[in-house]
Image 1: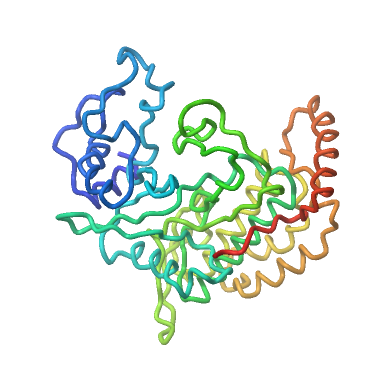
Image 2: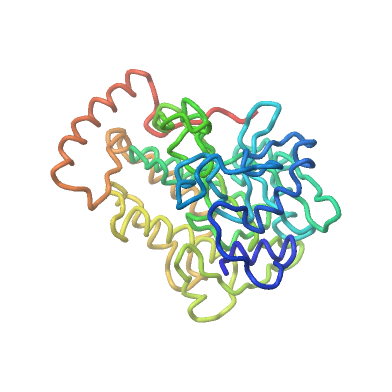
Length: 378
């Protein structure tokens, strides 16, 4: 059973005894839970895809795996998250059921209230609406649908710098509000990418258009700046500022276990967050192959963030000004340089480099900054 399956059972109840045989052309039990709430969600202004509407029958020949190539054959990727259209404006949203009064419920809604929502330093995912689940001890959190950070990939060093700046700023903001994320790996970061796309992309097959009419085309992040968010607060903890902050056992996050986790020793969860963010920088942009070229200027800061002793790591209030000071010294041409994979095929590298020069020049003519600057939040 996957972690998502376990999570879904905790929220909506255990599955019936005995799994049904796998049938790629039928709804799974978790999909049926969403189908059961179709009318309720429609009344609240949200329309799920045809697959999750009453009376759905496959539009494709059910023999074999032809459903993989049709819109209504696309199943949800994570059983605990469903996509839908907001009927009023066709915005694609993500809907996630959570138990009432859990840490995820409290923290997600905290950072979406009026006071936090208007703060530009807040990079926690915004909750559009909270829907009570009829006859249950759950609620559904409604959020804008987001994409994985690396899809599409960063085109320039400056684009990646914007991402890292927002994540450093966002984690600092959480700590300043006495909340530890505790699982801040790349898996729990996402981008609101609608501004990049000429037409809405499909939530399950993001390289295709929502209506399945062709390929979803997009601009660069430099041309159409977007925003990045910390997501998934299921492991997060909120602390009373009037009391000493407690210690926590570190969690494995993004495939890596912090040193204090390996030692099975509880420590300051804020220090663990610093390690996890520093480790993300190290494994994505510096040391682990294939990696991305052009980020050596981050190494001194990253080295301090990932030291084994949690007490010797800088706080996020120390990381933020150091990060900004480092970026301030990076020359403009470096920020506009291509964020190429370190293992890029040698024969294509010169052609891509030449193309990038002309593309970067066009961005300069359009007066696009080297580090993308998204529009202020309304």
